Length: 436
Image (cartoon, rainbow, N blue to C red; front, side, top):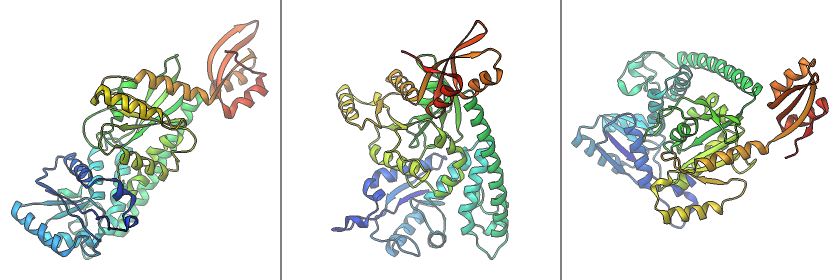
């Protein structure tokens, strides 16, 4: 197969003509990422080339001369698949396939293919299929009513008519409606699980970050878990929750989520919203960055962009701690420079240098997590009549009971509550703040 990067050139004297993403991301780095995506599903890349363009052509995206040049390359190497690292319209995709006499996938289709292979749980499979169908709905060839003439299919690189699930737009629309209803049930189940955790109650810490930033390795390090971790784009797709032990005996729940990427297809953001609700509801978000990556700053902006799509402003609320991962790849002098850079970061969004692989910096990160979670809580001392079963039950559901002793028919309790429930506990149980 061939990977082609059709990237817009910067127009001299008109920097605003280039989008922010184009301005930030080096062509070579973007092509390397696209090649990595292809190899993530075991595709053999025979050639990867950059095809700079001055403007996007409505018919073929590329100019006529570049299309003919690539036609010769394909004929000379017996290529069966071309991946275009851009978003193609249905007509552009069809025109390129006719010109090159081979299958053509754009960036969205490639990422959907990866997700289709990686989804292991029923929820993940539903989300990926929903994204696939929304993508292929506009790529039907209407003269036929089966998948032999349909753009793609669920696993569309395997050949025409592979599954024959939907025959036309009407059937696809019906299937999409059914999937959306099933995902609503998934969301309802997640809300029940979340409500159960709130009754315990455990605070939730969510990991987010660019794909291959080391989130799963860090997750395993923090929880002593066994989540798959590999040097591969989108190695982890399905979300995982594990208990996180804090330094002074407290507990939280740590959530590992799907990795983000530049130009993440909007179909996937929408389809995976049920999964990403864990991020929306999290008390604290750890933004894991591969600080050794040459494109680390652009990756940071890509993750921030996806968070904003979800309704989270990274610069407001102080919910985010940055984790600069993979510092084991730096020399002592380079680490010192990184530490100086980290020290100059805004106080509302501090960063911590760690190596999830070696464990360096993990202790300081855990301590910061504990401090940040405790900052939003109040520790109170109170006394409750042992006969007040309803009150004691309410406290166990709505607060973290740190200590509980029976004395003269009353329970002397120490509880930790969120700021939102502090006044209720104080007024109902005559509680007082604990003296340090």
